[in-house]
Image (cartoon, rainbow, N blue to C red; front, side, top):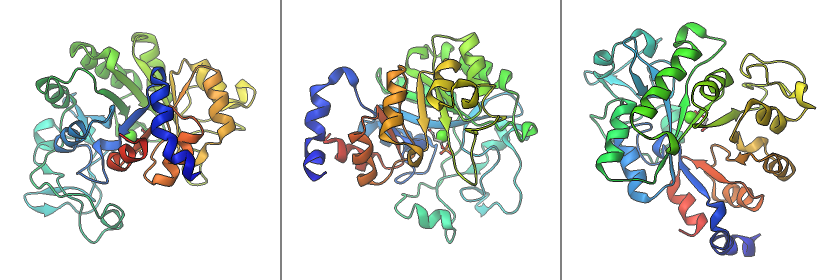
Length: 310
Ligand code: G3P
Ligand code: CA
């Protein structure tokens, strides 16, 4: 395995056609405040291939970049004070209200702060709009970086966000208006939004997110799920890659601990790219690269670059 790790840069250099896609998850959450412009800027400075980000829609119909469907109390201060208790959804707030929030550091003394203890604090950082990120990338003259944009929508909590049709239409319009359709992948655990994208914008790549876990699966291997828009593996010979292929997917992004080398091969044989999330440990990265994955979504793109020998 050690010899293989040393050979990773040579192997990847020998197959440039299969360019490896290193993605900065939430802009590089292990290093910088998640889903913020300063994080995306540093990830660009570092030289990642793709910025991974999450989106929601405000009351006044603006796409913003944030992970949860509501204000995250782990990250958020208003007027210098940490927000407390149950928090409102983005859908119930105007952009002007969202702009009053500071998400430039993790609240100390939380398990989340312990988990990302190396994250640099950047006080005074606000929740960005998707338009501001596109502007930032254009101002830098960056004509290469890709965007992996997730729609944060939950079919089991439909009132938390706009409906799939509205969400996908807003996102597609913004991507097209920015002239970035060929550099964007739209990803979701809620495959309903991906079906809308497939119908209205077939030129935009779609990534099907999956997790199989006793506590939070978005699909069932033996039954039906609200998340999968009717493309349940049981209808496709029990094969998850076959279900995603039938749904029109370009990319399969599974929770990395759900992968096996056999299922990576099965998906790639169907023409899917396999780009697992969220892989932060160098040993896990090396193992997955050894299995032939097409990219990695990581909170720690510095370690990702080191593993890739960049
Ligand atoms: O890109 C997939 C990954 O971001 C999914 O996990 O919860 O961090 O959005 P989450
Ligand atoms: Ca995400």
